[in-house]
Image (tube, rainbow, N blue to C red; front, side, top):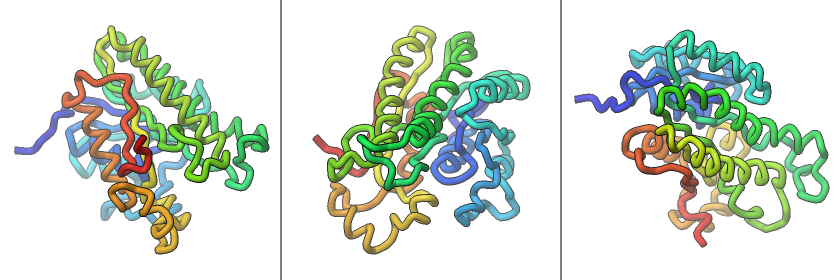
Length: 272
């Protein structure tokens, strides 16, 4: 018998046209959910030569091949009006939103300009916008629906970068670390507000994961592995599937009594 605990549920996954977001979206669809794919480019998988299922041009195509309903919506999570319009479109199309995975974001500013004392204002505002502010806008857009439904699950995506000051402790990736730490705390305060309405709000904090973008940046090279894997307790880099399994836990009834938590998925790189 097929395991479909999310049958009849409607999920929104942001930044889902490729990479980790795609993994989360496909996992939720495999569990029975209808899934809305949000991204600024629905064909983004091609950017990193990420192979889709045969015959599919987008992740929504892949989900429909699984027998689930899916639409793709182009919208930047940094635009509050666009986010509100997106959720309105989902309500009109599907009638509800049961699951939100706030995956959109990343460290997209130049690395050499990411130090705490010298990061340019434009880099800081950009990284805060696509990570923390976008997460807040999406949560605020679905919160009224979930409160009315008196049910729902929100999974925010933080990072191990929000838990420490970099592997070398040198102030690198400052804006990204601050944004992800903000997502961690926002998760806790939102969970306190949404709990009385039967809504769970949690956060995952991935470590060094072999996403398509990370692979393109050299994370999978022998040199990079030799440098990073000895710092990880499990002695391997993570995979998108490692993260998708935890998203499954947080989106199904397995986590019905879990809220306000930051679950670190890093193989043990951040043990205290």
